[in-house]
Structures are given as structure tokens and as C-alpha cells.
Image (tube, rainbow, N blue to C red; front, side, top):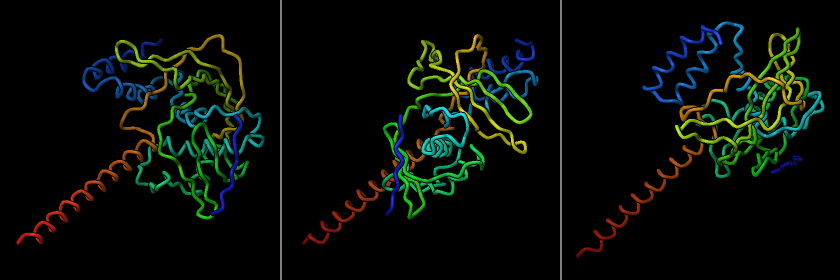
Length: 278
């Protein structure tokens, strides 16, 4: 099995009605679900409202690894682009049954990573598949099988994105993004999550091609003077990452196998006892 490695270096009144509904629903279904409902309902507000939900979703697997900046996609670190592409799959809503859970972890075909790569970055650069070393984990590439093996383990993202501004032109969209440290979130006395101050800010340039947006550049930027934003929707237990889902499946399979072994052992013991009786 040939494995090539690349190592990384490292206020309007219009909002009152939806909020009123949210307060009512809150007592019924709980905070986590309401956050998701608000995140979805915001899309129905006036067009002048700043809804960055989809951009936050797009950038979650991108900033998760604290990527190196690049002025043009052709100058980006290929291993980071591959890593982002894999994370985009892992952070998606697909079923764990989509992929096989092997002894070494989740098995993802190279073709799926390539497809996600194109969705994120377009076709200006061609993906070069190889093993990627992240922070305390590794996505192992098998050149013969053309697959990636993803370890099933809990990983706290280095950063989560919070888009706070958007500038549009005919062929580009430039996003100002606050990066929130993944380990800095805290739980308040009322049980709600308290968002920390951003660690830093970046500008992400998306090029528009045939109505589709692709990541073209990621650059550091200074702290904006004002940052009136919407808090991104929080994931619920019904919308877990693929790794969490796969972990659950693996544990269930292991438990089932253990139970089957125990039952088989019990049956064998009974058979032996019966044959030994006079």
C-alpha cells in the first residue's frame, strides 16, 4: 500500500414577530431547537437584514483548522485544502451509513473528497491527494484503494466562524469573519452558551462564477471598528457531525457483537452442561 504524506506547518419591528414565536416555543422545545428555528426564520426577514447563516456554514470546516492565509487559491497550501475538503464532508448532514467504518476509522473515497474540493474551491486548482496531518489527528490516504481513513475521535475545532460583514461586486464577495476559539465557549448560569470575544479576524474572498461562489483567498485583517452581528445557529444533537454519528454506529456495532458473543458463550455452556449430565 503506497501512502504519500504531506505534513502541515503550523432593530426593526419586523423582527418582533419571529422573536415572539421563539419565546413561546422556547418553553416547549428548549433552547437548542429554538436557536435553529431562529436561524432558519431569519431568512424570511427583509432583504436588508444581515443573514450570514449560509456563509457561516460554508466557512465552518475552513476556519476549523486555523488555515494559513493566501492571496490566491493557486498559492494555497494543498494539504490544508484537502483537510478542509475532508472536514466539509465530516461537518455535513449525511448519514453515517454512507461510508464504511473500518478498523482504522471512517473510510471516505477519494472521489468524494475531490467533489467537495471543487465545491469549495472550484476548478482553478486540481486536488493532489495525500495523507494529511492535522492537530492531533491524521487523515490517512491509501493511494492504491484511493480512500482516506478518518480516525473516529472527538476533536474541538480551533476556531468557529462568525461573519460580520459582506462586500459584493460583480464577480466577488468579500466576507469579514471573526474567529472564535473553539475552547473558549463557556456555559452561563442559565445554561446558555456564552460567546467569547473573537481571537482575530480574517477576510475571505469568494469569486463568483456562473452564479456559484468559490473560496479564492483568505487574508488576515484588522479588528473592525463595529461588529453588529448575528450569532450563528448552534448545532443540536439531531445535527451532529459525521464523526460523532460514525462513533455511535461503531459503538452500537461493538455492543451488538459483544452481546452476540456472550449469548453464544451461554449457549455453549448450556450444551456442555447437558452433555456432561448422566
